[in-house]
Image (tube, rainbow, N blue to C red; front, side, top):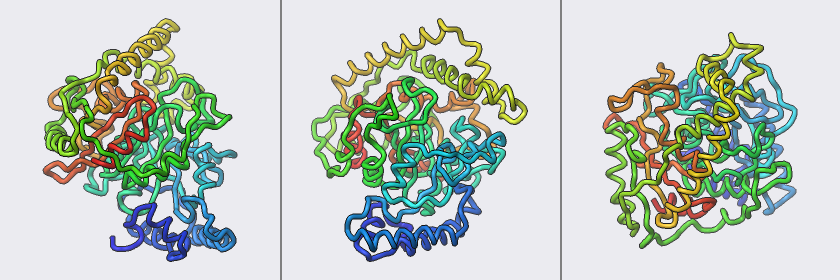
Length: 457
């Protein structure tokens, strides 16, 4: 790619702001890229026709003529919202036949903010059914394929967004992350996926605004573009009681920082999780990078006991409450994993849920104490490289059989349970040429420092 679609989002926005490129020119370049690439990878869905997209770009240019240099930060950048996210004017299918024709009447807060920042919505990005699992396939739109190998998974649930970014079909993308849905597809597609701290980005409307775990966040090709997106997406909102006060302007600061003498914990397998040898080899080679940055890298792992049961229990509890009515009415239209999770959630007792909440509090305290010594934790994003797209999920990792459809991504959802910010950054490739990322975990609510570390790496 030797054109505008290969530039960073910040560079494209600067061209539009300085009148060196129009929003129409930016749109034309991305529409051409979509036409050439999307039929092969199936990442972008529910797209407006090209004429409608160009009219939106022309309207953006007309606004620019009136506003002069006072343009919002994402002005003129095309975007396609994740198909789990409510966005007026586009269907929100959730990858389910049940919601194939559902048209929302309100925007998510982050969608509202991205529109206000000047991004031009043109489509949605593909997701797994109900966003469940980290492999993007569904009966409505089909499977999203990995551009590095069209026989492999693109990850999920923000799989369509990740593929659209890595192929140059979009300059920016939004996503969400409960158990790894920003980080895993970032890892599988050689881009950056950032899971912000719980409560930093508003999640409303949300069935459980105070139960945490699920977050919204950005994906991009560079950490600098992640920071640009965070300057728009973050910040509290009175409509979200689970969102804490923060200053979005911090993400407009320079990301450069000296990491000499900073202690980081090195634990690729988080204390013994099965890890594909190809992933381990890529990560082991990157230890020297952190040492070259001046970090003090030590073999150490936080005490994550109970992270598995805490996450799975509270996730099933949420799922049963949210999707239970859908199951009652449309069991025959739901994938087996969704049915099983709702039923598992319904089988929980109040004691089961309360014990999980207590253990969660204990986990958070152990993590706090660990961070008194280590500012960052380094580990795998995914325990496997991109797998066969015909599989629903990996059954075996390094000789260890997986018992359920998300067990292969424990390295991601265990970190979700800590409520810490985490980021997937490209780290290398397997001998077959498949991308592998590294997961960098920051201290509690220290998102900007985490972006500085990721930028330096």
